[in-house]
Amino acid sequence: MTDEELVQRAVAEGFANAAVVSTGEIPFDPSFRPYCEENICGQYAVNYACPPACGSPEEMKQRILAHKRALVLQTIWEISDYNDKKAIKHAKTSHNAAGLRLAKQLRTEGCGGFLVGASGCGLCSPCAITEGKPCSHPESQYSCMSAYCIFVRKLTEKCDIEYDCGPGLLAFFGMYVCD
Image 1 (cartoon, helix red, strand yellow):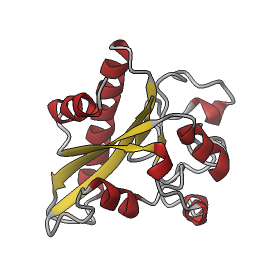
Image 2: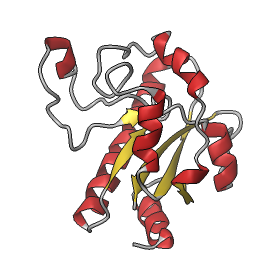
Image 3: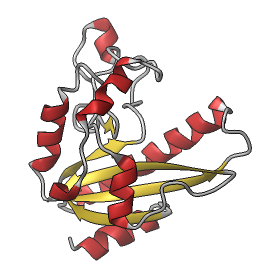
Image 4: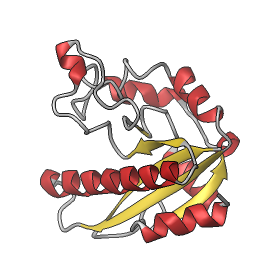
């Protein structure tokens, strides 16, 4: 599948913007990992797709670099209050659901790869890790950009995608990594 076809599929799935980059162009910064350890999102050590279970920053980086391309995905949401946790959660959930639909479609069409989400995997609640059981959806599980220590602002600059969309708008980012 060409880069242009990947972008077209993303836009058709409802993403506001999409661009393809070589995985070697993705800016990684392992100094972001301590933010995961602060556990602001509440997923640290209770989600297979989040640290520490997902792997070290270097392991996560190598997982991406084992592939050639990344389809960078952006959704934009209108929001009246940036402290409205319910609205933010809905937007993240919708962003990741669109990513999962796109990933399934691309895999079905022979473009194997994996999703990087806007937050930790939310396929199961609670995650099976909390009960010491194996992941129920290893083929669909996704880690977030933060778990991969991706410097999203720099990545969006490389893709010519606006990171900060302006007042009253909230953007979320993800990727589909493939060959």
